[in-house]
Length: 134
Length: 120
Image 1: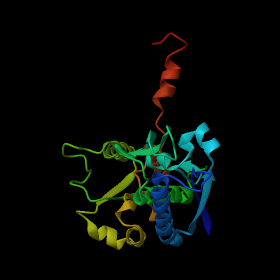
Image 2: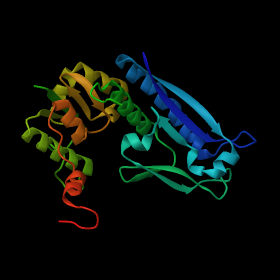
Image 3: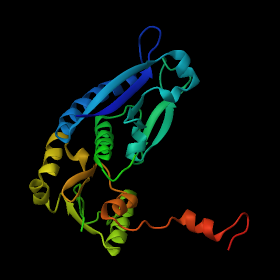
Image 4: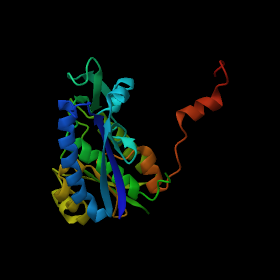
């Protein structure tokens, strides 16, 4: 069984809280990983979710690191042909603009399950392509 | 010869490039398919709304649809094996899979034509 690493990282405050955007994305990520496990198992690929916390110091240096999902080492924007955007978020995030994902002319604050699943399937099938050297 | 099969989502027509609000990725892919076919590639496309039986008859496509839903479309098979799902192949993908000669890029052509600040 080959492994498809999925990394989701988000700001967690000293009080152990995160913002609504990251909280909701976390739920979508969990659902997407369940779907991907079922979808990819017959292909011999198992998604492996790693959830990491970003502290406030790291967040303030680069707010776009928070609510970032990497699949197979690449952002979901890479797999979906989208772009990273930003927008004002909430109290936890202060005056910083937080990460959004722009795909197909739409901007997403919370990354929906179907985008995560699609990115995961693209990444997994790329792993299977013998004509790709990388 | 390599056979490339592309299973499209439900679309209004064979290529999905009719109508007023056309998805640019469909336009690009239709052009890439046309180019690849002209260069000898064997490519078939199946539209979910017009050829649902083709989807049902492919165990790979049917299985993916059952487990993931239509999010997984488009699906591309190369000689019956899963090659890509979730997005359309690029022209580079088609070139690799079909064993075609890569098209020289415009950048390389420009580089061979122009030198420094002078150009032809």
